[in-house]
Image 1: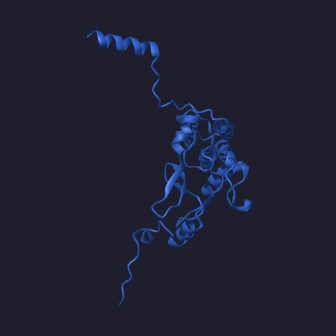
Image 2: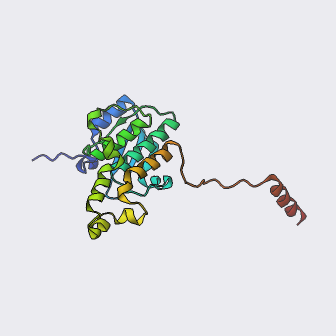
Image 3: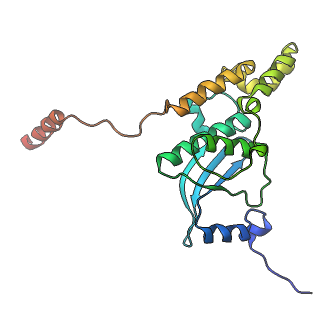
Length: 214
């Protein structure tokens, strides 16, 4: 019996090395999307023989700075993550990329993220048939379900406890989605600047004089 060793990432079904080889040879920027139980993240990566370089990345937690109150792992949030990543890429003069799923299955949530990147201006090859409808992107299916079960107060509060706790009525999901999308498109983030305020020249001069007098 002959034992053939395989790379750990192949055993863990994380990397398709045949596809990775094509990416390296083609020298094309690629996008990866990871949807977990709580969040979604997306990265634009530039392949390099010495190691991949992350050129832009977005985590669904960033949506909070744009006022997002909904789930951070559903179809609407996946679209918004893709939209935000696409904008970051365009700002860095990156205009083209391809989607790389590796060993993962292609899902509707990944397709929603892909649609967001495309509508932000990032050129990516795909078929329109794989994309979710505009109604699902906006969360109309969530709003309709909320209206359907609202008469059952216990079920309604149980299913939408997170949204209600954040101050979002699930029936208004499409309106909320449109508001947050508009903020992303127009760069209306509530994120505070990490830069320290500049000290006025007069204050610096006063401080310097005090130091000299000692």
